[in-house]
Length: 383
Image 1 (cartoon, rainbow, N blue to C red):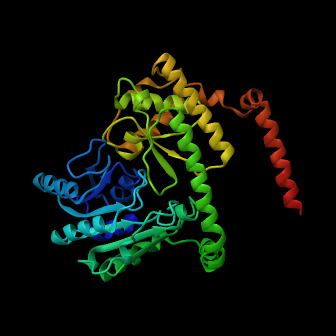
Image 2: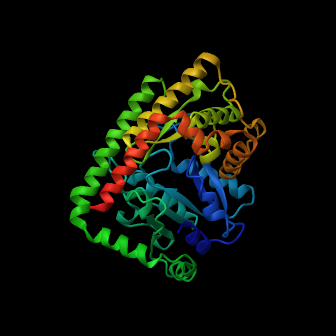
Image 3: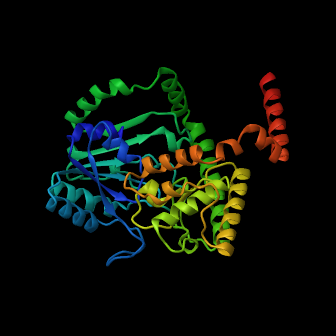
């Protein structure tokens, strides 16, 4: 949906501002077929005047980025915001949103507000403001809200996006383009049945989801605290923004990837900040906690083992790691990350070592548990 809106409001070579670190897929969403450039509004751990916390977005930072880009000859057509934020988990206040809307109105800029995590706010005391709920929006013709089922309904991969805009030209353009992105009928039927069952959503699904999110996040935060890993206090999201800088010495982008590789070799996936989210400084990882509890426990045990090894032996590259790929840090974060993973598979013994036969031999207890689970599933299917 972001691609369709971006294509509708800009031309190839135009630019959209976006706070960073942020969801790295946006480079493909707006930069692929639409060929629109992303101009980062860099947020850092170093607090500036007026900030109350690290990585804080302010209207001034947006204005400074806009002025710098214009001075470089770039044509800015708008800003893309994710609220609640990915990966920081922040919620933008109504005051901040209005400040941004007023700035954009002053410069005739579009605002794409991605609210895909709007129902993933587990903190009961947090106050969330949708852009659609604001009175007296200064330029409603240039404000476009997008949302999707994937995150809030725990259905990643079930592609179905929503656009709300009062701009007739944008709606007509998206309507023409969406012909090539239509939602299959069976998926439409499934999602319709879900949203029509309002009683189940309000009394069962949403309360259960929030309760499980709070429990899982608390567990992960406690384990990270015991390891000396600071985490960002945030009220929303399916993930935690964690600070691993104490284990990355010297603190460089290259060594962030070394730690990433060590986690991968230990069988746990943590998303590195620079490579995946265009973070302006090394040492931060996004950790998803919305998984089964037993998976979470095993993952935290593996993380603890990796960090223990780093503390005792230093940050050394894991055996078989692709040194050339890990040392080559470029701007195209997601592309580089995929290249790194492909390099590890093709240039090491990783694929051979993780064949089914080898895994079964090395993990007899897990294999037996898997067999029992499969038998249980078969029994359920017969009933």
